[in-house]
Length: 384
Image (cartoon, rainbow, N blue to C red; front, side):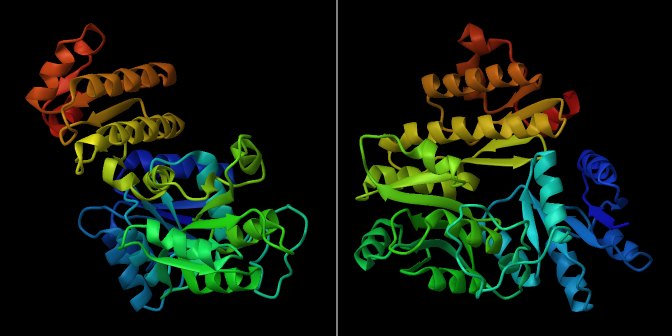
């Protein structure tokens, strides 16, 4: 019977993990921080470690470094509320098998654990042929994520026309890293050598089934977002590509506004909304005033998704920290009204954290005036 060691300072997270793992028939051991985790490993030999990033006494990355220094090669899945590239890339260099963003859905946790334990098979090799069938390989092991020392890269673009590569590169911010290739074999090789945040695949490449290629690359890059690239048309093809397993659609010829939205969806999550347990914190707005609506639009979208995950993780309440959010009364109120509506739909309580200016703005509207409001996170937590 496999043994799982969960290391997290949140008793709620440990309880959720324990329930999910015991339901799968696994044994579970617990620790509250890295020091306790290392002590546990002196007396038990788990098959998999579920390791939180942010903990008191000793955090996850520090414990992971000590673990690998001692030549312990136990598979590790990192649990983190931080989606910043530096944190994920640093953990991958130390040799994690995968990572999960908190809050997570139980089915996501189970799938990642089963994949890390290689219950259903091994990863494909570079010599595995690209089948014309759109059926994904069975639970392939995350080869890219499990190998230490891999280079972290933002985007991989696969298109048989090099001019598309050049145009796309000019539209990305200068600090973004990008790889590009024209063939399936090159794409597989790159995905074995690097770790990608997003993989963009053209839907029309000669002699290549793009859906089958996407499925094979997903086995090598299980954490990456798979995006279809297609010519802009009057017909809405987003439903079709998502039915084939892609997470998003990008149209060409490239449009500045569409590229901004694409980057906002896949690269700026950690800037506008950070989730830590059941606390959703809005990031600081930095940019020109004409982009303020985009900021609030992204926060609204991410808030909906995050609240769904909080409910799935059996949290009773959501705390929304607006302290760094820009005070634009109409947009701010609209955001809070949406969050309040979603919380009621999901059966979650709601507490707002913010500045006196935000408190005055919410108090001026009947729909938001009665929502519990606190000026500090500690006060909101103590009142819960």
